[in-house]
Amino acid sequence: MPGIDIIDSETDRGQAYTLEGFIGAMVVLMAVLFALQSVVIMPTTGGLADRSVQAQIQQEVQDALVVSNQDGNLSETIRRWNESDGGFEGANQPEAPGEDEENQTYSVDRFANESELGQILKERFAEKGWSYNVELHPESGGERTLVYQGSPPASAQTASYTVTLYDNQSVTSESGNDDTLEEAESDGYAVIPREHKDDTPLYNVVEIRVILW
Image (cartoon, rainbow, N blue to C red; front, side, top):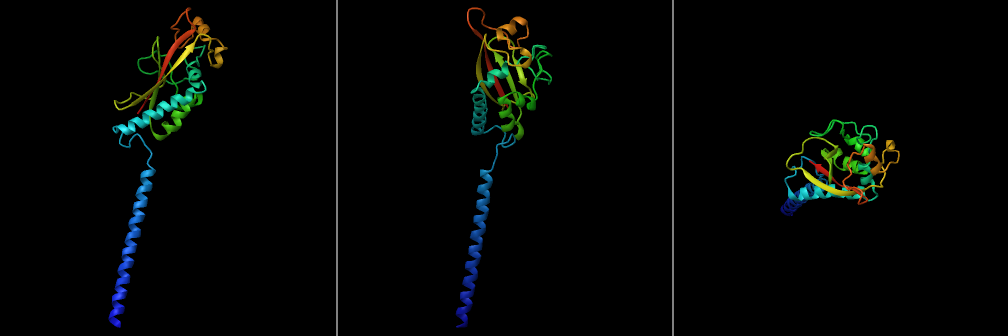
């Protein structure tokens, strides 16, 4: 009957509209889920106000320090002293505020070339817009800065790792002539002073600190 055909046609059209609406909603939902999974934490992604973000970032910086110390590279980095000027070999950027003029620092790129830590920090953070300072805090002697990118805000994250230096370890720069740390101290170009004297082979204990924002 004609009336039945009209009803069936309208029913089919309604079902088609419903199906199209369902498919459209699924497409939108999948797009949203994909976008959420693709989020990369950037300096402007809510800042560092969220505690879970703070914990994640701090752990990643800590991991960078641990990984770079596994093969001794972290110790080698802080023993790369330049015999000619008493600074770190390859450092050619201005000193950090409050430090002596001869205490030149590394650029991000130069530090990445000089150390495994620098390479990790550059690839994971600098290339995504983060800034960081890398500081040395010996048990004795003044603070030295390896990388300085500015004054960090209160929300900056800090991670650190402690390295022990010994008298018989070698200066790792090309200009060091394989001098031991004790010999570099005697010759007057030790960047990090000798804390422990003749009664122990211990030279100094240094905290490497990374401040990220």
